[in-house]
Amino acid sequence: MSSKATGGTATPPNAPKNPPVDHAAAEDSGMSHRQILEAMSGLMLGMFVAILSSTVVSTSLPIIVSDLGGSQSAYTWVVTSTLLALTVSTPVWGKLADLYNRKTLVQVGLVIYTTASIFAGLSQNMEQLIFFRVIQGIGVGAMTSLVQVILSDLVSARERGRYSGYLGAVFGVGTVVGPLLGGLLTDGLGWRACFYVGVPFSVAAFIVLQRTLKLPRRPRGEVHMDYLGILTIAGSVSALLIWVSLAGHQFDWLSVQTAILVPLGLLLGVLAVAVERRARQPLVPLRLFGERTVVLSVIASISVGIAMFGTTVFLSQYLQLARGMTPTESGLLSIPMVFGLFLSSTIIGRKVSATGRYKKWMLVGATMLTVGLALMGTLDERTSLIELGAFMLIIGGGVGMLMQNLVLIVQNSVSAQDMGSGSSLIAFFRSLGGATGVSVLGAVLATQAASSIKDGLAEAGASSAGGALSSGKVPDLSTLPEPVVRIVEHAYGIGVGDIFLVATPLSLIALIAVAFLKEVPLGTKSGLDLAREGASTQANDPTGDAPAAPADRPTAGVA
Image 1 (cartoon, helix red, strand yellow):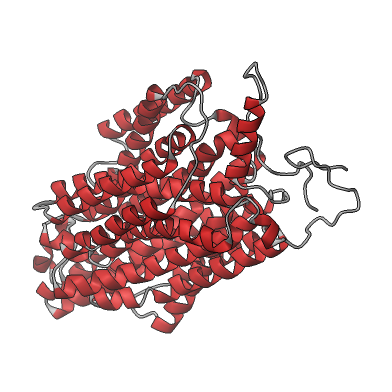
Image 2 (cartoon, helix red, strand yellow):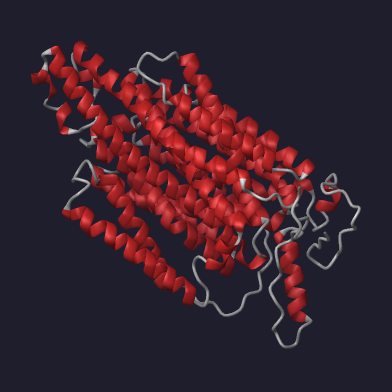
């Protein structure tokens, strides 16, 4: 079976399927390793800002919601609102990246994030906080979507694993520093400081990007923004996420609200598909779903999102409400998960670049994620912290092996003209999985915790002490008598364990999806190389009908 790479260079029949990568050759696009790292420095700061926006408040949420008089539903919505905005805006940023200057778009996202962060820190009630968290999510969506797209401009798919490891390391540092920093700030200065701490990093990222990232102007034809696609996709996702967030808590699963939100979400989803089929430049090109790799990666990304966001959010709630720890202590105890993510993304990224093989590592990662979530399902208020650390280490290692590689293999599968849309598609479904997961798991936790507290109070003959607890608000343990504290700790201990058990089958689906992936050799040309080839082809074609540069990948699979 023959194979051909972009540019018409035939691969000899007796050539090794995975030759050692030549780093010097990979940098022939005009940038040395040092220059690439300098160009990536602003991107890594931007990625740090994106991670910090969610992790820095995770350990402070119980105090924030309690201080502003919020309920368990509000607790969930502080996270869900950002994820919802991030999810909806991600494909928009991805499409814009295929049409406009990518550097400018990242900087616009940083400005949006910075402005929203300042106002979030000034919030006086839950409604204001949730609103500005939505705006934050739109800004973070730019970093989440565009950092990987710009990396594809700078580095070939074969080398990208090496540099994606650096982004994974930044992700790990942000995930470790965020909860710890959030805890220290909350204990020392108050929770509002958590929203201000990202501002200097955002400003620094803007300046560094301006100084170090030099991207040539991308040739493009007539631009037709798919506004109807944006409205229908955003409306569909929002209606369904609002339903899963509030059903079972603020209204019954079988209710008038359900009868409105679910059909509305499904109808808008069907309309979105119809719109995208006819759009001249669709927000989400449906042709991407004709790629087997893309479809399977989307399925796996949903599970990664649930594990990544759900673990961070509910682990903090477990440590503070079931174990009575401070925000600082709960931040420190999240280190094992991030350490596993840091090691796996860095080491495996280098191995992928060196060998060109990625599927076996993704299988290992999906297995670790499934096992880790199942082990977390055994949690209660008496679980050993050593056991908890080991469980988190396993989950972190699994997420690290999957997250960056899912983006890499999709970028390796789509054409150069769809690089932004393809990359953002994975981020979109990862965020969608996270938002849906946090919403559904939060609703399950609220219901189970309230039921367990009610039963515990009844058994202890302390039903009169449960007035505030039965209202659904997140409890403040410092205001409760000791017997009631033990009941609340037990309720949240077993409740958090149960929601991890709910998430485990979804991770098993990710493992099955990865198992069906067909391993394809990684391309050896960067996005800038392909863009230059495309521009050269168009310049040499007087009719202007030259096809867009295809993705740099051989067509034959790897056994």
